[in-house]
Image (tube, rainbow, N blue to C red):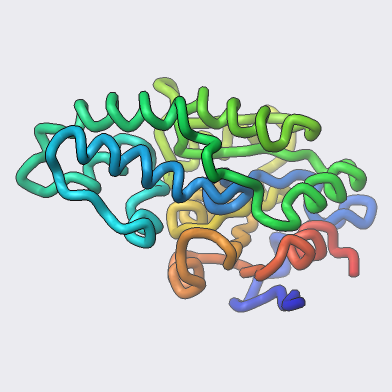
Length: 238
């Protein structure tokens, strides 16, 4: 099992000791970090595209289309000369996704053990996603209902989407912790930018939707290859 921690030099100033816990709280991205949602998102979008008579995309292409929110997904999925169909595609894919969002979606291997072990260490868990709020809550309830998340923030009208740091900072405020004491875990450049803009410790995961190099290029302090390695980074335990 691979469990190397650092790919980039990580600044020691962000490391916090808290009763042997390096980070007393962690914010997770959802899609591509906690759960593999790619095929269900792709199927929903392709169904909407087909209904509109527009070309569909291969599954692997969706790794680069998702991550910045539903509106951007639909905009990028449509041809440049058919951006007038964005709103129609949003409605179609959302309707399909609501009925099929758990056809193939599952937690990544080891994630449930990770959350259980972090909870046992009294590390606060939170989620920040560009997925619509109702789908974030539904996914957490369905896949991770036995875990307590201290804050859950999805795409909603009163907060800008990632990489704007507003959502991350609102979670820090809710947790009553300075951002420097919070680790942010995600799988895309959007997540790494969010963490850095919020002055949180940026942890990239290599099992998600994007390549390791993207995480490096956008400011990951550390990249981990397994949930077990992530646990050691978050807790400082070996």
